[in-house]
Image (tube, rainbow, N blue to C red; front, side, top):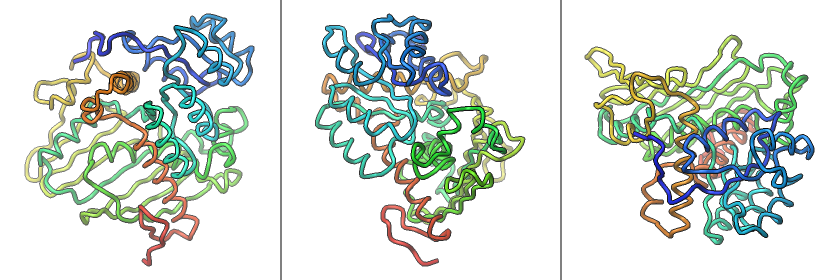
Length: 399
């Protein structure tokens, strides 16, 4: 159980780029990072493309006005002059800016925590990974949902053979908030998400499905996709060529099959992220609207609902619980869990503790690169007419 006691010697000096007043994600980052005040302290930021608005916002959340900067380059330069300068930065800006800002941060000697999708191409990801290794720094990716403890419970049960050999993987992340184009007309944050120059080659595949895809990898680390087929649509025509709905079929190397549905035009759906793993003995199913529960259905036995924080749960699951079984946890706690792991990873990297880094399960640079690879393969399949493509290469596969 987590109770706020320190996991590292002292809080890391932390700054944000983006995440200001008009951001859809900034508050999630701050509540996650600052839930355990022994992990991070927010001491600086370049919070907004509008420098004055960003400075006003920073002061309003308690940052010294002299450390509210007009842009990230100025922040890096000025903070490097201070003995108490920043050590780690979160990038909570539109997708198209991640690559350049991450490189600049690493070159400034900073650890990086970045929004997803990480970059536009696998080549960019591999370049940044090499730079991070050269600089001795961590790059983490904020797949926030992956901090839910039940995801680790699923991983443990699969490792223990509780469901047998995996046969079917059924993934979904859908909602209905973009069923019309109203969001693009009223929200700057939504408008850039459907602009290919800023968002990249996808909308919901990158914005939604990368969360669920990463969690499936976390849950089933030994399962590798062999090939996939993607069919994507732009039901709101002004979003083309970016999709607001997509279906992906997957074949795994062990013979299992999978499907994923991702959509922002699932009208009436408030929250549709589900993961179901079907094995030869039993099935597991988790729904993020009921994050404290995990369905465990053994063939021929009554269905079970496992509850977070109970003593029958695996120790890897209960190690991240915060409030006890009687009290509901959710997305805020999930974000706090991954931010705490980022802090532990950064501290271990600073100390040269490779054993801790190898044993720590968190969304790192490799997870970010794999998310890019997922998007690239889906887009390539869809843009070639919905054909099967080998997952690790660009070679088309005959149906």
